[in-house]
Length: 308
Image (cartoon, rainbow, N blue to C red):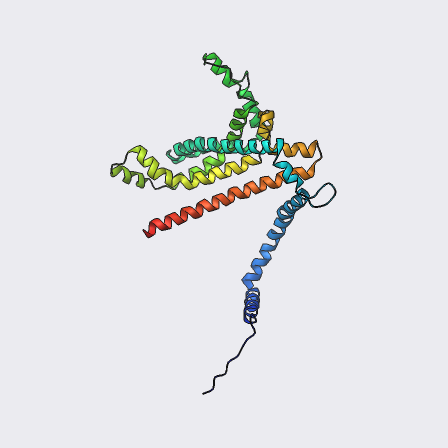
């Protein structure tokens, strides 16, 4: 018996099959309808997001003579600019930590209320967010000033050391920025806490665990994903926040957003400002990547625990 073998040229089958699959997909009515619906969204993203970011990147790599250069990035990581960058990272981290502490306390308290009271409490937290950030910042200036409400109360109560310097320093910036970021933290944590099955804590208590043990080994691990999400979100938002640090901070609390504003409006230095903007964007991507890695690590640990 003779056997006939057909020898195909290497790589000739795969492109044909790919082309057939692509043609078959495009011939499907649902696929064509989906592509038609997606086209406006893609064009919108390209014009309003991708193109501005790409233009900013090209501008940050353009030298004064029109050639390619990394001078603006090197300039951002030395001298006063490096100090401002580190100050921005430090204040953003402090704001995230304080927002997590206050937001965790508020969200935990609200999650234990009845639905009606919980809704009213959430309104108290969220409604100030819809007021102009400028108005809220001036409100904090009135409260924390040398002759403000807080210092007058502390002075009237003969508190040791009163009045305190609560404005135009890092403390004032962190307080004001935390107030802006707090609604995001409370909303994220409240959603996570409402989804926790309270019977798990009751079961732990029934097995003899104390309140501290239940909180540390049952409640906190369940809330941990929300804590990570809220912390990363607050950190990313604080990196580029401008208004409150500019009004409530001093010279030593200058942040990158204020530096970008100064370079564009006063120095007409668009290249350096573009480099700083790209650096902030990279920090944002780094925060999102960290969040992704933490989620992957948590899923891996969960799968290992299930397998064991």
